[in-house]
Amino acid sequence: MGIKVEFNPDLALRNISEYENGKRSMEECIPKDLQVGQTYDFLKKDQRNYWLLGELPLLETQGNQVLSNPKASIVILEATHFLKDGEVFTKGKYRVTEVFNDGKTHFNGWQKVV
Image (cartoon, rainbow, N blue to C red):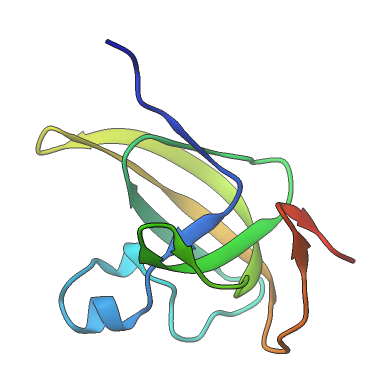
């Protein structure tokens, strides 16, 4: 038996409507009005590892690896694994460094395009 760990080159959260409809917690969703410099909490199911030494894309997920283009550039400040009702979760904090509303390419994979 092994340890199931996922390495994520991005942070993929749900649309805020999932929270508004009572399907997800706020921390599982992208806030409606992302603000540069603001810090937000996140929550993901399973044990996940994130890169902590630079910027990475914030994506919107519909589930099953259906992902949007980057919504913002973020820095993950902390990530912690924990058990809740016998299931593994990862929670943490991220700071927004830039919000994207122009449809341009801002990342090539996990690397930010400057």
